Amino acid sequence: MYSEERKAEILKILEQNGKVSVIEMAEKYQISRETVRRDLKDLEMKGVLTRTHGGAIPRKVFDEIGGNVIQEYPQQVRGIRNSQEKQRICRKAVSFIQDNDILFIDNSTTCLYIVPNLPPELHVTILTNSLRLLTEASQYDCRNKTFYCLGGNFNPRNLSTYSNTLMLKDQFEFFPDKCILSCAGISESRKITDGSLFEVSTKHMFMETSSEVFLLADHTKLGFNGQFFLDDGSNVDYLIVDRPMDRLEIPLEDSVRLIIAD
Image (cartoon, rainbow, N blue to C red; front, side):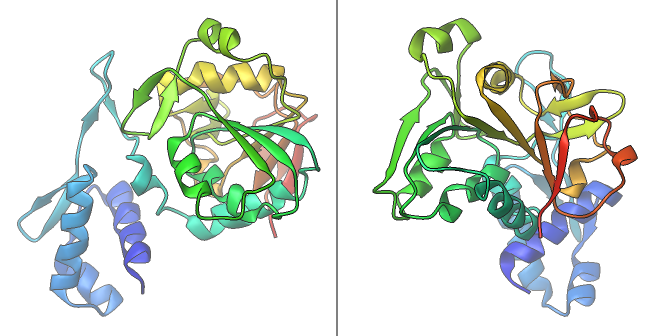
């Protein structure tokens, strides 16, 4: 098992049990205790957990406005979780992109896999508030891609920028062909929610101004509630998920087209 896979398992156990044991991890995955400790140390340095004698517990993170405990992981850690599912979802989303499309791509770790899957010959313009997406795009053949970075305040936890709606409208007059984004959760009680208050206005503005909206969500986000309301689903045209499911599991309007990533 690779390091990233082990760390993904650690995150899953922390979410389920509220703690993780070095001994149990070592026995379950047939690895040394020292290997587990190195993984825990790395995740502690990234602000995800607090190491304890014999294991670790989740680190409580407080929001910058209300002082409430939030569970949003730093972006480099969220990228570890369900990476294979996210790649499949993004490959399916890319199949809908046409030559000369203007795209808004949000700062989610799910959408980081869009650019690597874009055919080199495809001409697209990409608007984004994701600094990590822009940085990683330099690793690929993007000669036919034009990138615009949305300005504003820097959010170091998400490696993103954010502005209020009026500031964004003053910056850009683009009306994207496609808005491609993810979310923290989709549930009956709260509809579509996000984990960062700062990026909600950016995402919602592009959901309203784009011709088509693609919401990408792996199975762990269905039935989960984020802290901040994003949309009631009325602005979503396509929901792309990683596994088959009944329409009843998706508390969105019937007009939303459900796509299964194969």
